[in-house]
Image (cartoon, rainbow over all chains, first blue to last red; front, side, top):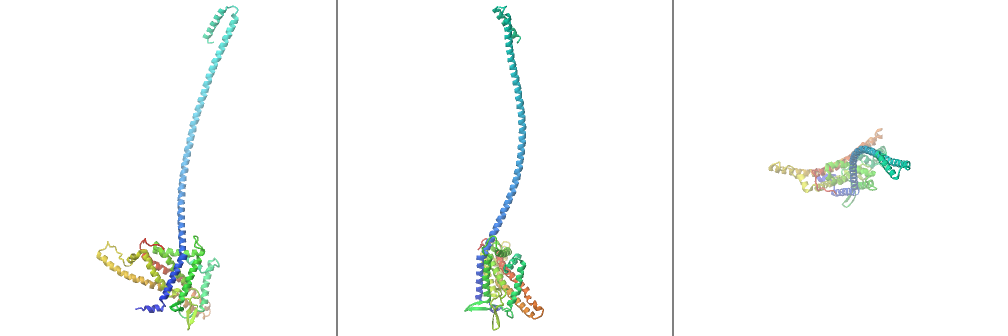
Length: 172
Length: 318
């Protein structure tokens, strides 16, 4: 049987010393934790959280940037497509408008020509009437001057009227 | 771990130069010259297995190991406060980085053993153990420790003795760790959980017949009793492992100086005689680190064996 008392005595084990050393260790551990390690661990945790949140934020930003780039490219493609459509539409519209303008111009020119012709015809008729009237008057005056000495007043009137009828019938 | 050793070396070298080579030379110089100078007052014969009473008033005794324990304890607190001077910051100072590298190193090793929840509760205690044992061990290698003292009737009595070469210190650490084990296990698993872990029948009740299950209950109870003895034996194993290594290291260094003392009388060899203990100083430096790590690791394993069985939701942080 091992004699524990002599064994412990050989190594100088004493409960007073055990107690002192235990209390000393606990006190040192407590002080170290309270005024040192606790703050360091908190700082490490805080740093880890910041790094994690920073990385998370960076990932989110990367993801958002990728999404934005994709949507941007899609948007650009759709806008380009839209622009091309607009250009095509503009071209076709311009073509139609040009055709319309041409038609209208032609129509206007035709109208102008026809109205000019009409005007010319009217002027022609008017001029013809004027000439006819002038000639009639002239004939009458000539006839009057010629016949005034030989015919009576009644005969002259009858002669003038018959001459007018002739002129009218012959469209002069 | 590379970082850890680098910073550890840095702690003991003044800021003379930023060069690593200069620091190594300073450390080597310290190990070679200072112990040799201190040995001048060293005593002959082996190191005493028990501590020496330096001062006593009635029942109150002050031994050489307690004196050094108190000095080193104050030094530990001073060093940590000095390292964290200017406050703890998110962007760490050099001192804070040293402490953080040690904490980070231990964190990486111990957390998988204990599980996250138990780890958060126990880690401050483990840090205390690690730093306490480490600095007590390293300070035990400093010149003058165990070699400066006085003589009573031709018997040398040192003023200082490495704390862990006194069984009182290592036994105190083991006993405190034993109670800490009980406290943390109960905190994490509850008394019922701890009882089940030691004595409980781990067999599946529904897969076995009642007779076999009952028999296993008795068997597990017996195994639990053996386990209890094993748990109690941890006090002895923890304390004697640390004590044995430190005390053995002290004796080894002492004998190497004795050997060097003999060799100094031999021509030519006398020039290098005092270099003989140098490799053993490096060995003891390594032992100091390893033993503090082993003690911490074993305590964490003992706690982890109980607490890391499953996810105990009622394990709260400090």
